[in-house]
Image (cartoon, rainbow, N blue to C red; front, side, top):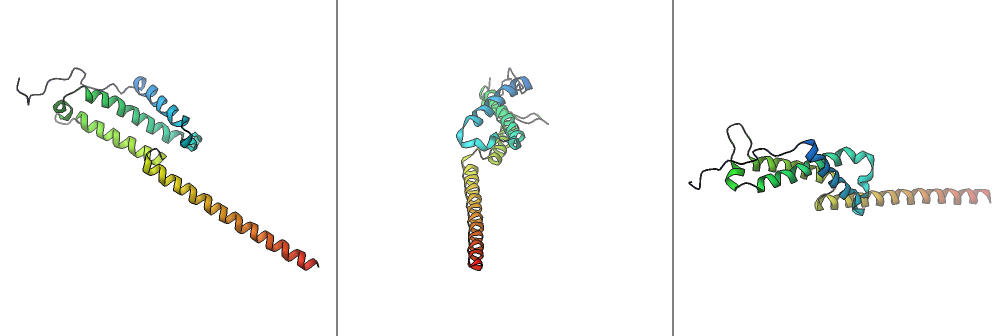
Length: 147
């Protein structure tokens, strides 16, 4: 058989059913929520985004296993009107990476999020100090007026 000929793949489509994806996604969520560095993701407002990321990441895991079972020629092959296995994997990886960045799960977005939180705390502290100073000055003025 010539080397440029593509052998048929036994499992020509990946199993991305809810039954396969959901348990993997749940495991990813549990792992992230157990990390002390991602405590903020415990908040219900992050639940939907966290679920979307976990589902995408689970599909990446399943697609990676599927692609790894093929030769590179098989994985890159795209019949007319069909997406190749490698392109499908790339698309889901991109989706997962986008959600991860939005959630602060990659190093760059985690650093940016940490910086934003620190700046927010610094601004809150400055506001509090300004308010305390104004209250102190008002109290000092009031005590001077009484004397």
